[in-house]
Amino acid sequence: MNRIIEAKFIGPDVKMFRIEAPKIAEKRKAGQFIILRVHENGERIPITIADSNIEEGSITIIVQGVGRTTKMLNTFEAGDFILDLVGPLGKPSHIEKFGTAVSIGGGVGTAIAFPTAKALKEMGNHVISIIGGRSKEFVILEDEMRKVADEVYPTTDDGSYGFHGFVTQKLQQLIDEGRQIDFVLAIGPIPMMEAVANVTRPYKIKTMVSLNPIMVDGTGMCGGCRAKVGDKTVFVCVDGPEFDAHEVDFKILNQRNKVYRAEEAVSLHNHTCNYDKMFDVGLKKQQQEVDNG
Image (cartoon, rainbow, N blue to C red; front, side, top):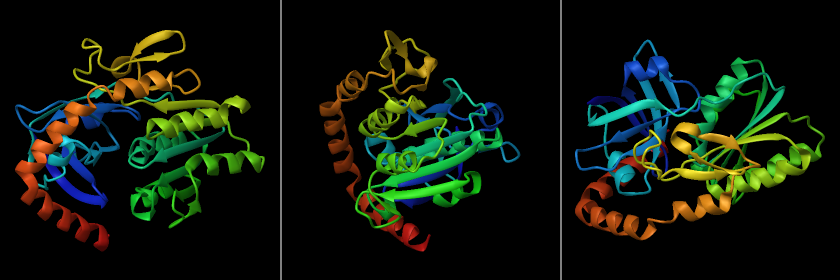
């Protein structure tokens, strides 16, 4: 079992956890992930490692409460235990000195973009970070990004904070201004990553995306995470999670991610019925923590 050292909400339904996991903290690299279970009968869910502290023996993950397990996990507090977790899994991000690198995070995807942005900066790149959200409260990790990036541009769909528009529009604006961009990493919802790929393709800018399909075992055996990249079928858990954005078949990826939507809805509904009171209390506390910073 792994003890939670710290737990706090950093946005609506978005919670940051620092968890005791010394062996993973020591070995993990940017771009890798863990798979965890919250209880014996629970599903196994993949979550990217946002950061680690070798001295403390901890890893940091950021969880968005969307389905049954993530909503349950977001009721956990410091001192609680996660049943088990395994990692680091997947291939680390390929880091080299590209020149000017743009790290794009959409919503909770910023948590995945952060460690790679940090690694790119440590390699000597000029790092530009574009972080987006539907509105101001959905823009996360801005302060953390400012510590590792040379330039940070928050964007909001509704214009409530930063640049009014999508992350792709801000990226296009930088390109139109004549900025030299040598590398782009985009992480977020599938439509956003596909849109970024469409922006950079005409300029032949090397662009990578981190995929998060349905995943069960994390070893490539179940086949649940398979995707099509170029003319190859890949297993994201072992071949990725990062791939050339211009080669990813986003249509197939999107279709596969929707396969169990009906079952997920039933599971979430049943879970919500059993935990209504718990979530009411949790949501009130969550709003309090966000308001208090």
